[in-house]
Amino acid sequence: MKLNLPKGWASGFPVDGDEHAFAGPPSDAADILSELEIYDVAAPALRQYAGEMIRLGWLSGDANKDDNAQLQMIVTLLHGYPQSSPALLRGSLEVTVVEKLKDPRLTAWLSHLNWLSTRERIESPYEPGSVNVDTIRQIAKMSVYGDGPVRAMTLLHKLGVSVHVTRAMLGTRVDGCAFWCLANRPLIGLSLRYDRLDNFWFSLLHECAHVALHVTGPNQAFADDFSVRDALEDVEVEANLVAADSAIPRAIWKRSEAARWPTPTNIQRVASEAEVHPSIAAGRIRYEKNDYTLFSKLVGQGEVSKLFGI
Image (cartoon, rainbow, N blue to C red; front, side, top):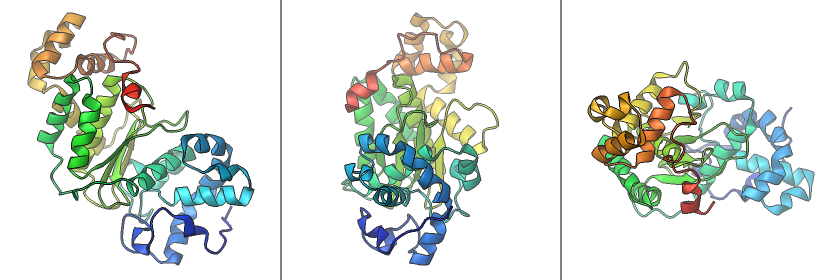
C-alpha cells in the first residue's frame, strides 16, 4: 500500500527546516518521500493503536475525528524514525530486522523519542567521548541514592545527551534504545517495560555503552530487547559486558560469595563493595540463573515509575 500524502502534509512537524528532516544530511522532498516507503505498512497498521497513542500524548485528540487527519498525524510521527537512509542504518534497527519484527509499535516509540529530543532544552552540546567507561561507572555508583535514576539523567543531560524515560505501547518488546537524534546528539530511551530498579540500571548502562562505543553519529541506532539471549551481535555482547563490568567490576564479582552462594546477605555484601544498589547484584544473579522469581524483594519493583511520575 502506498501512502497518498496530501500537499503540505509535513507542515505540522515539531521543527522547521530541511536540515532537521532527519539526523543526517539535508533532504529534499523526493528523498523524504522515498525514505518514508518503509511506512507504507507501518502507518496503516498503527491506526488500530491510535487511541493508545493519544493517551500517551504521541498524537493529539483530533486524531480520532477524521481518518485522513489520523493517518497524516501518524505519518508525521513516523517521520521522526531515527535514520537518514534505510540502506545505511546500522545495528539492531536495520530495516530487515524491523520488518521481521512486524511490530509498528516499536517504530512509533522510537519516532516519538526522536521528536522529544527537539523539544528539550540542553545547555551544552555533546562532546564526543564525554560518555566513556569512567562515566558509565560513575553513573552506576549513583544507584545507591534514593533518587539515583534522576541523578543519572541529570548528569547525562549535562553531558549533552538526550535521555528519556517514556513508556512504549503495551506489548512492545523493547527495554531501551540509543541512536543519534534529530537534535544532533546521542539519545537514550528507556521504556520501563519492567518497572524495576535492576532493569532500569542495566538498561541505562547498556545504552550508555552504546553511546560510548557505537553511536558516534547519524545512521547508528540500537533498540534492545533484553529477553533475547541467543545470537547477539558483537556490538550487543560488547555493550552487555561494559554495562555488567561498570556496575560490578569483574574482579569484585568473581571473588564474591554472591557469585557462588547467592543469598540476600551476600548480595548486600558484594553491592556494598562495588558501591552500587543491591538490586543490581540481585538482577545479575536472576539473569545468570535465568530465574526471575529469585530475590524479588531486592530488585526495587515499582520504584522507578514513582521517581518519574509515570
